[in-house]
Length: 203
Image (cartoon, rainbow, N blue to C red; front, side, top):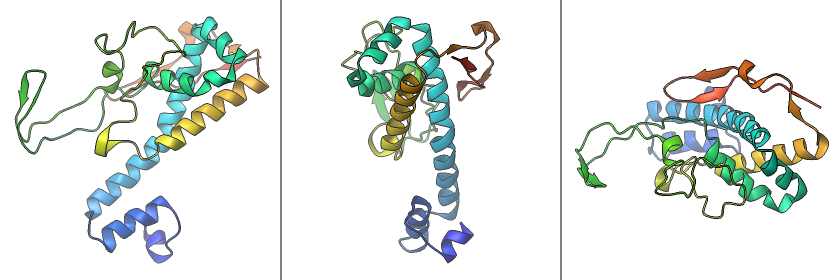
């Protein structure tokens, strides 16, 4: 941040610094928090989605074959994998500024609200057969990228990266399969996420 303050560029960090220094719309703590959040989300979340998403496709060979046979399914496949294979168990805490009622439950002002996007993405009241991977699912809106004012600012990039990675893997390595038995895969699990440490593949 010190470097960007001295030599601003045409990038997100420079824009955040300008919002802090020129417009006074962010505190220094908020600036640092946002910078770390963007860095982590921009690298780890896509990495986790790609590994868990490709594993999900390998577990569902019919879906994988359909995607290999019809590249027009790729955009819907990306959305369905974001819904189905989302690694983030909990989102950033929220604090209501006034009492709010949701589904008959009142949340007092100032209480901590911890959201679980992975659970919302498998809500049986929202999705038919929510535990089924279906790359042709039409009503596949999800909470993996947030909503409203908290919508992920990197959403277009995440979708592009995921789509390009899947397209490249399927095009260049049509015979990809797991290199180890599934029970040997190692997962990194915490209260915030459930993600593969690695996904060994072979041709």
